[in-house]
Length: 317
Ligand code: SF4
Image (cartoon, rainbow, N blue to C red):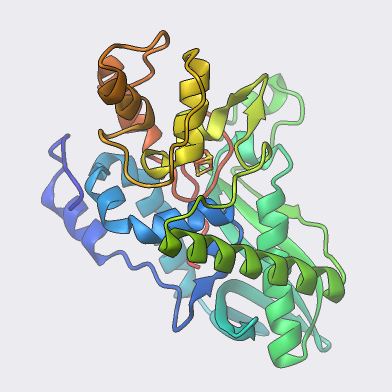
């Protein structure tokens, strides 16, 4: 159960409890497809334990994002379809995605996805945005025969400041901006979706057999100057990740050992290492070096790059 360490008022708790996550009647949602398979599978497997380590205050931006979606859902506009969930079958598995907005015009469709995000994110390439929207375009074409002609993210910038518009280069001119994403061919979309489904199937099979899960790539781990930023600061499944534990072993000058994916002896990778070694590692990025750090690091839910503002709330979806 989620904690409330900052003793936020009861309506916050009620708001959180009312929040619904859904992948519809499907095995996987598009949101899961855009996560590296190891992360998606470990999140699914350890969902309850991850929730138990989460604090209500850390969920604040996520709650705000969800509620912006809810508000916008309530307003209809001609030729627009909002919040439609589309299902399909890929490799024998049911896949679904919920599309925030479809604008229909002359038999063609424009897709828009709301993101409650940071200025940092909106001013840098986000491959997962492009992937998500192309997966939606694939669903519409495959299941409804609709031709998608454009895909956009409507980025709602929670940390936008008017005073920065003239001071900072390439700063967004408004607190809400549209970001066009590159539209792939149907063949590219299909190949990407199929590849991701196969990756998830392989990861799930490995987990159930007690084998090593497919590794996250350097790109998945947001490797910079040898440091996997996502693992060390943002990934909410690192406590269960052998790859991260091994990285820490190596970092601490130990001989690399076989560390399978699964719960670590203590709350975090380094904590597990400490439990095994009985001493503090050289960097001691672990357990008690910062309660505050741990708190802020738990924010990831929606796969966002490190931007000091954490969590993104894109939906489902
Ligand atoms: S801790 Fe790193 S390697 Fe492990 S699942 Fe997370 S991102 Fe991937």
